[in-house]
Length: 77
Image (cartoon, rainbow, N blue to C red; front, side, top):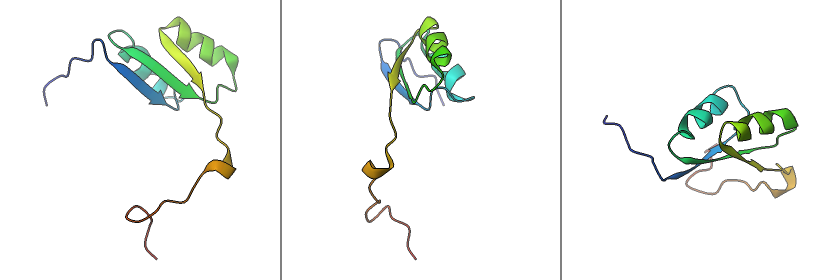
């Protein structure tokens, strides 16, 4: 698969404080604008990512706002 030029792109990385997403977001931020979404319960993780060029975006996961998947995505029983 050929490389894709992401310069000038805006990329959203969810779960950006995770072990896989954090280094990926930092690497992508070298050539693209990266928005990293997470709970950021540890403010130092957000600060480190922002120092590396990733824009932190706080996401609050509220169970009452999660809706069940509808067909065709819902699992069959």
